[in-house]
Length: 277
Image 1 (cartoon, rainbow, N blue to C red):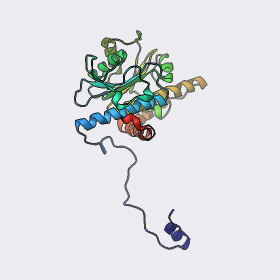
Image 2: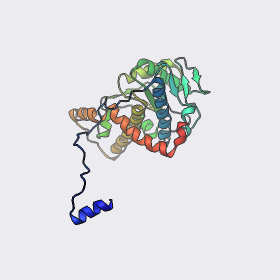
Image 3: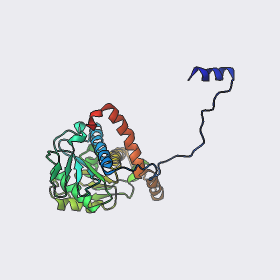
Image 4: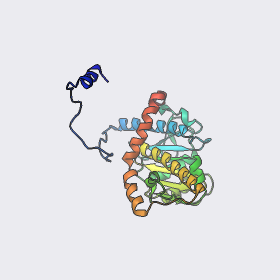
């Protein structure tokens, strides 16, 4: 507090009013402040958030072995997507490391190699869902554990309601996904939802931005963790359908996920600015 302000309080003297005109802003409107970018600017934006998403996943422990991939559709060439090179630790991914892959699985920017499962799964999702900009899949611990139960999640908490009636189950595990026909079946199971639980495999999220897909993945793994703990402790009480459905409309929107991701991303860039190289 400034000396002037302190003096005003102690002496009772009037001080300048710091208030501005009252405004009401409690939540994130889906269209509010949506930036208009050129194709080059949008490509760079997606690349930066994609590199940041990998580093955030490393922080959350989603970097199991060589498994895991996040993709971002290119804004100009809609049948191409950016992805991480196989074998590079998530915590070291930079913008310049990203690969651009076409619909045939061929690398057109970068040296590679590309994860074959990443191509098989993500190419099918990007083809089936033109609205999807990004998709995320890794072998996170709690996502894997929950996937073995062969069930979708229950609406147990406010946070888990983000996925209420907005995630599905793919229950036909046939080993490592190596061809697009398998990816197509996963895309069919995903449908128009934001997430799918891959039985005996893990979890996958998809969204209209890198930020949304990555944030939803973090939130879905957390929801799996919470339900595993709750069921281990006793008999969890479900949120009633009407309340869960209402809560989904409140906490499950892409804009909220984008803002949640950006709060993590901003700190990441300060601490690890080399990711932008």
